[in-house]
Image (cartoon, rainbow, N blue to C red; front, side, top):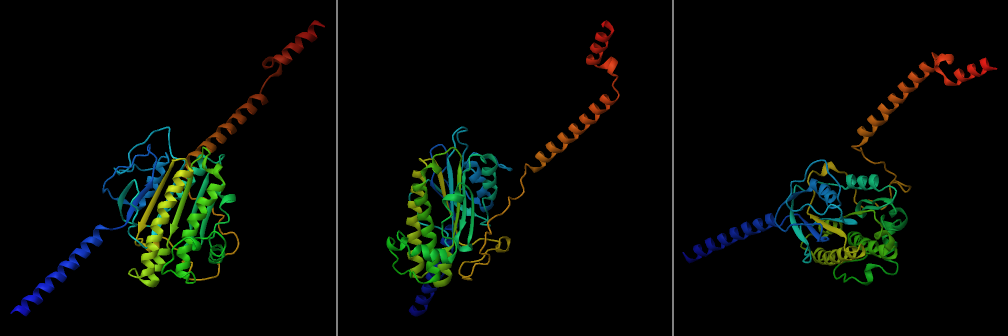
Length: 362
């Protein structure tokens, strides 16, 4: 009898443990963390969820740009009209639902984590501040994807993107291998190398901005969009319970905390730094990507980044202005030409009229 009751109690404890684990996993989901923000960009603390597809609109509103649809999200309040941040830095970390970032402004749960890009925001920055050549940098080392615009073309052209560039950069002086506690990470393993390369990119961005401080002191806003998937690759290779994954998570949390503080200080406390942590994106067929570990050869060693902008919603307005202006000018030319052709020089022109009077007097 006692043995049977003991078995029942053990079964109940097991069921309760599984239920609590499932409940905790459901609560601690993907998140959006605001690491740094100036005082005039007001983020309200709360558990208001935000959809992944609305993050580009949120970034655009923090920079003072208008969006097509109103963002009905109480986490961001309307800020000052004539004072906007000089930069927005968005870091997307794949493979983890949350990071230990204690020094933050606010944190919100992320629902519907679909793949998103800041192409619309980058296009707005380029169209409004084309003469000022702002810095627009979008980087995803895992996909060998690099997009630069404006002054970023000359400053960030040496950032490591391909696997060969990453290996050569980590072997140079000033790499993160000499300063980070690697612990269980192996600098010769490809999955570990991808993670370390992403950390190196964060260090290189701040180092280049310190060297070119004029980029952070101009009047045009800058945009940085970084996508890191080294943790996702480590979890796939070693498992999320492995020491490699735990050490990498702790390293990345410390690096992102320092990266946010450095970027905020370089822009004179006038920058917004966000971190999006997502376990895995939904609808993976929506966005095609290729891991850097799938192949060591570069598919296009030339210049694959000369991409055109997507459709601009001002195209219809500009097209109508040009079209009707051409029609009006064409009609004006036709009317003026008709009147000149049928004009009587003796009566309609003051030049011929004065000439005729002068001839008569002589």
